[in-house]
Image (cartoon, rainbow, N blue to C red; front, top):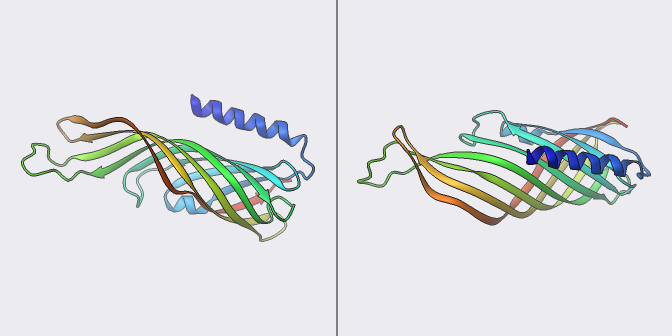
Length: 195
């Protein structure tokens, strides 16, 4: 429910700011690097002014991948300042924030003498990545662009850690919060300019 409310507020913010934009640009994007981790994603870009734009994207994993048994769903909102004074072209910097839910499974190393066999460790929780981004949007044709970006910042997580096997589930770490500093945004996105 929270994700729907956040998505609705983001859409309302974008629509209200579009009426004031001087240089209209609307584009659809997909992060092709995300598909390498089997994370389906789609996003949209809207110009706010000649030098600023707003992007929103939604992603969801499509099943087990090379990253083990990981499931994640989330939404990310990004503001970008374009040095070219033309949205979706050239060098930019920006700020991104997102919200998501995840479940990560790992094999559990059972200590000797413990009755639990073949255990798996489950990390279940929610995350809020925040980043300062730097990127470049290469113009491929009149409508197509390739956007390459990376960002670093804090990753806030609230998670529960459980150990499960065929017999029982044990909560080894109850709900905890963590703040780590990571590369929290990265992408190689194909962008199609609609307007």
